[in-house]
Image (cartoon, rainbow, N blue to C red):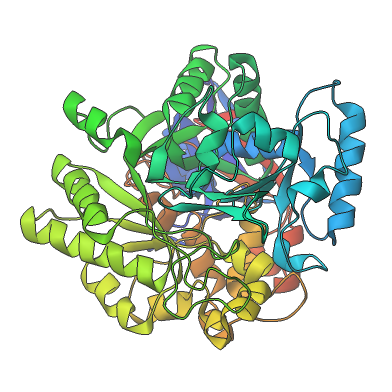
Length: 539
């Protein structure tokens, strides 16, 4: 905690609070905002030693709040080889990048890459184990899909994992196979549990297993790298939407060693619901830095990997509708139990078939145990049916989409599902029904880059330079609030973060330009100059 009081002035201060859009100065005392107003008022409000910080024309905003970002998975992605588009454009490119990675990897150790997007490859398909054998046959090779919902491994690693022709598809997942029935190296959704069966976190049909076994030392490195990427982007708080024992222990260790600086709201995977219930936990337990926020459920797979549960089906996948992680009645049972215990729930649901499960579950929860202002969430809410928007509004649910997904994957989704794909992340429909507009990244599926997300939400532009779903554009103010105060509301933290107001925590981001004075096309190029948490500069 800073001993000096701070006085920020000399730039555009965008408060993101209703009624007071901007201010001349901000006074900070300890870890809190003490006064917001004119320079003279702020200075007069402080006593003792004051450190004046001249913004020199830059813009001060509340620290960005990302309500859906996987911190340690983000650190992991930065420590694996980058096989994302447009760096790689073909399976041959992937093999070339992994061969380079092999040269940097100790002999016999696993060779890993992150960011596979099959729809942007020239071949428009997933690689196979035989193709990854071209990287190495005498050690394991693994590549993870950009969504985290799929991995492809070589034959060496298939054998090491014990995946053979006699292993059946798990509930909520699938094992890719050649025409002769032998596994082809592709592991979808809950089939990724095979990575953890010898050592690691087994989560069953509660989600895709992104929790790769690792040493405690390297897990701390993942926290550090993920946090650094957030600070570079001005993100001061995240909701980590898939926490297991591995993440919880790692966050606590990082906190105990004074490594952890940012704020993390943890959403525990539904695997842990019964244990948390038995111990009496509920949403809100913890403090301003590390707390339990909600229970994370999975309804379906990923639109990007072709496993989300869509009634319309896919044009580019043999799995015509994707699949569900739970039978509908089992899913409802889990959600109702979490609601009754006092948890907010956040459910991954991309396709309309999966979104209906969430609507039915929330409806049943409120009928059985009415609670006010729960803010049950639908994570991604990728392709809802127009008729479902009214239910989402009436049930006061909070969709949490990612505009960067439209930017990165929008054209692939349209090709995969048809014209309905134009309604990917339908902010326009939400706006029409007064449903909150929240932005997030799903890092590392997309970089934790709020400014790129804001640009994508305002323009609906794609990586290829086209527009997907122009009717779903939102205003710059709506987008900025979606990554600050509205994001804070999505995690029930609007009383302490998300806007620059007296009594809130002194979390700020300093931008080198005012977004309102910048052309829309230049918004992604605005630079983060400084990041502050609790009145301490962390970047």
